[in-house]
Length: 393
Ligand SMILES: Nc1nc2c(ncn2[C@@H]2O[C@H](COP(=O)(O)OP(=O)(O)OP(=O)(O)O)[C@@H](O)[C@H]2O)c(=O)[nH]1
Figure (cartoon, rainbow, N blue to C red):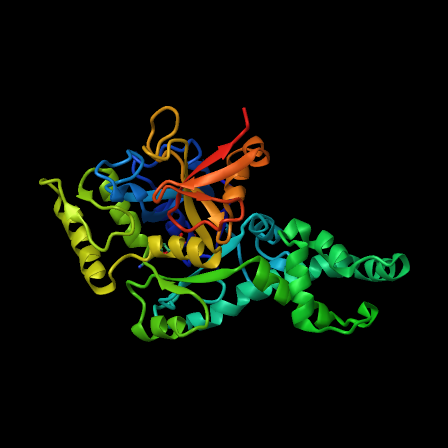
């Protein structure tokens, strides 16, 4: 599993609660050994319709036709203004962020915490003021990495005739930046042809462009249950993906579901009580979550994960099988695997993902739904069930 989503945000925005909610899985789907890797690293699941719903029999790897596909989640703690200068936990925060391909910025949409995360009265801090500061921290972190060696690098590029995109991407590789990100950013920023003339401002502008490409970000407008409606609607009007969330409500639902009190699949718009003898406190808690769901249609946690995977990271889910008739592997397990792949991936890419040998001995693939033969360049679609035929032993 190579996809990692980072949760970032100022203290008290609700990151840990979000993390707990998103990584608390029902035993049925929690059959991955690394569900809790450590305190701030876990496995969450993207929710999608299982292809087996088109068949008379369920596959055994989904929950009533809902397929949960694992994705790694890290709770990146310690973001405070000027973290890039070493304030707060400083670079620990940035060190962890480098492993994330996408970021969910958890914001306290209720306005009940100041810019540093100290609790204040709900509604007294404008959450719009929290948006830019994470962007700035990441940009300035990248700038710091470049700036440290810039004079030496600039001279070296000139003296040795090196490619600027190669040198810059090597410098930023530790931040998860590749050459493609740098090439696109250079063409967007239209800086002077002579890089020796670049000012600090030019470098910051370049880092800003690199950040947008290499660390796509969306916003979880958290504490939506207590947030003033105006704050939530202002956040939703931003030109980026914004999902109102109530991490606390999702924790209540997942705990109750795990404890057998309710039937709830993460991402459902409501739940059913199945345990008759709940305590008055449990009943009251569930009633208030029910009232929230009636208003919002969900807690937003699953929606956030789904949008991060399908929209920010642009992934699709593909199901490799060995028997195109039964949609099973050689042990007769139906739809045993679900792979997350970049949109635009081909049948040949899938073959390589299964095994290098299968990739290099690829003959053709079969779409198990239509039984059509697919060539190596055939682009896969979300939900495809595919058999690869190869000469690999
Ligand atoms: N009303 C409400 N409160 C929430 C929600 N999510 C979190 N909280 C509360 O907000 C406070 C801070 O939550 P945490 O999850 O500890 O916040 P954090 O961002 O991880 O904070 P640090 O660990 O300090 O970085 C706690 O009191 C939570 O109970 C929510 O969706 N609604």
